[in-house]
Structures are given as structure tokens and as C-alpha cells.
Length: 448
Image (cartoon, rainbow, N blue to C red; front, top):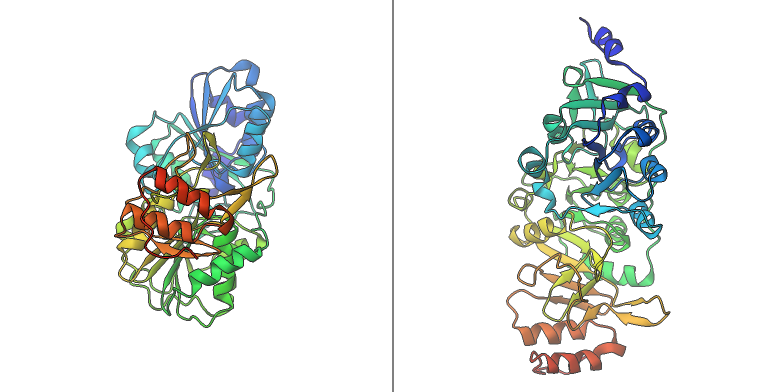
């Protein structure tokens, strides 16, 4: 049987495809921009016929029809490996969104051997190529692992999904697919980074001055890492490399400015290595069928021992708060969950292990609370219930607009002093009093 004959045999409507779902099933909804749309709508229609359906997803950027149909989660239990901005809006509206703590590089193994078997995998994919492969698009962190574990695999074709070259595990063959749904071809979600603020720009300057020609760059999610990328594009740095989990618009600007050759990388030279991409159309057009880029599963991109093979690996990530002991929280306000650990811990470890490498955690010194008051992000201890994303033993360089401080090899009193020195001046006196009360204060230098 030819490929097109097999294609036609497996082609069904979304409504027909979701008939395979039965009460009690675990369903994977796809990753990132590959979360399903037409199948989501079709499954939502079956709410009154089903019970106890468990959904897996990660950073789903789309409105989710099953939650619209079942806002209290009485039928569909929605579970995420990492919450998106849309997920936070769902939670604010009262919909339950459950989180599974992860170390991102380990998720393929979780799926293959730890979680409950997946009854149905649903993934949005690019159109089938002439060899019979459906490319997963700009997200292959653990898509292949999901398909291997699933009893039934349904692909939802979207002609707008870029074809992202690997790497490996970036596609699935038609022989491994049970049903094909031709979706509504929605455009890729446009996720632009906010314009950099003056604080973002200052932090970016402090980080970029630590970088050297030939450095390999990992940028995390958020305005500050994006500001670093944009500043690199305007800098005199050259022959930089890319080994990251998330590819964003800033990498395109760095490449177009001639900064990102990849010529000095120890592994995957000349390639921009990533496991998922989210940004605007400039990014999706750039990665489409581009041999300059190589998408890999996350157990390759984020495994510290692999990433650290690149010399001078510079990892740049955000935080919510840092306490005087050097504990980093990047994922919650107290017990209110925001996002997830994601790959931050992976790259904090990798940056330190890389020869000449550095790991930066950047954050504004303050934020505005719900009551309108200004609060410090450098705190005596993490907020009650806050998550330790990076333990005090692994965090390296902390950066605010007031400076940077390396935690490695420092005593508790040195940490307290160094972090207070990069806190907002309005909060330094009270932080000193807190450090004294906690028994970690020994002034050795006048505070700046």
C-alpha cells in the first residue's frame, strides 16, 4: 500500500477520532504550539458521555474547549508539566489546572517508565512529507516518548506548523499513526517578548559584559533574557553559539546581526540547538526547513552533562525572588503557582559545569504588590510556601539592576552582604536587620 493510500485509509474527522476516548483514559494533548485544536473541540462535545478523563499538556498557548465545557473539572482533569500564561488565566477564573513537578531534562524518562500509560496521544503536526513523516513542528521535547507510550496515536495536521529539522525524534512515521485529522490550519500563536524596560537593559548590560567571543548562549523565558539577546545583537561579540531549550525571536536577531555563527561550539558546531520554539512569525519563518537549526528532545538539549560540553556556556534565566541564603524561587508567589521549574535547574547546573561557563539568575530588585506598594525581590527568606527552583548550593551569579554577585564558595554572611548590596537601596537597612536576626550578618564592607 502506498503512502497516500495509507493516509486516506487513516484520515477521519475530529469527531470520529475522539470516539476512541473512553471514561478513565489518560490523554496527551500535545506540547506547546503543538497542542491540539480541532480534537480539543471535538472532545469537549463528548463531556456528557464521559467521566474521569485525565489530560496531559505543557505550556498550552491556546484557549481550551474542554475547560470551557467543564470549568470545574468534573469530567476533565487538566494536568500540565509547566503552566502557561493562558493556564494562569484559567486558574484565575476558577478552573483547576494541576501541575506535575519536573526536572525538564528527565521528562522523556518519566513518560517512558514512570507515569500511567497514555491511552490516547493527540498531537498537532506539520503535513506529511514525501517519505511519510509528520514533523512535530517547533516542539519535540518529549513528543516521541509520548507516541511510544500511547496505545493510540492521533495526529492533527496543521499546514502552518514549521518543519523543524533535527536532531532526532523530531517526527513520526505514518506507520506509527492510528488516525489522521486534517485540522483547521490555525496560524501559529504569536508570543512576543515585552519591550525591555530600563531595568531590563541595565541587567542585560551587566550580563553581556561577562561574555566573550565564542560563548554559547542559553536564554530562558521572559523580558530580561530577551533583553540580553537583543543587546548581544547590537554588541561587538562574535562567533557565538546557541544551545538552549527555548528558541525565541532574539536568536533570529543575533543570527541576522552576524553574531551567531556557532563556529566555536564543541558539539553541534554551526547549529542552533533547541527543543521548542515560541515567538512571532519571524521566528517560525526562520526555523522552517532551515538546516542551520537542529531540534532535539529535551533529554539531549537540557541534560547538563551534554549542554556543558560547550565551552563558555552562558545561561540566563529569570527569578521571582532570591533569599539571603541564595535560594532561588522562579515559579511561585508563595503557594500560588505561576509556571514551573522547567529547564532552569538543568541550565544552572550546565552553566557551572561548562569550562569557562557562567550561570546568571536575573531579576528586578523590586516589584509592585497588589496593594500598590513596592516590595523587594531580595528577601530574608523565601515567602511561605514558595518553591526552591535552584538550591543555594547550585545558584551561581545573581544579577539585579544594582549589580551582580557570585554565590559560589561564599559563606552565609558573605552571601547576605553580597545580595543586600544588589538589593534596592530602600530595602537594604531592613534586610541587614533581618540578616542580624537570622545570625548571618557580619559587615565587612560598607554597603553601596
